[in-house]
Image (tube, rainbow, N blue to C red; front, side, top):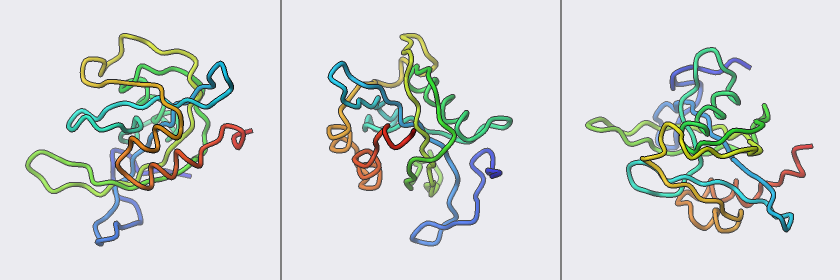
Length: 157
């Protein structure tokens, strides 16, 4: 399926009628030594809230590849991204001096193989491994919380 690039709107609207702008996100996960799923959460640059890495589609990359690129830039993650959406959420992206943009984020699973200490946004964000339950409690948005609670790597095979 062809995806709009650079945050262009696609055929969809927010609950209040604004056009939705497409973004991509990564649910970065690994298995703990006890066999439990851990997800890597990052803080937003503006408010310091816990979020999933996300951003705009990138020309020349699939949506999954763009999500992996965002995970690298925001969290220093490298790993195996799967090319299917495990969930979606909407949010309002704040912009300096402009009305917020209504965005829909397609989330792709990314099994983390390695973390780098040196990555593009390392001085702007914190990152932390969390259980799915803790991550679901830390995020502000109910639909992101539900996505985290529903995630299971067993469903990916």
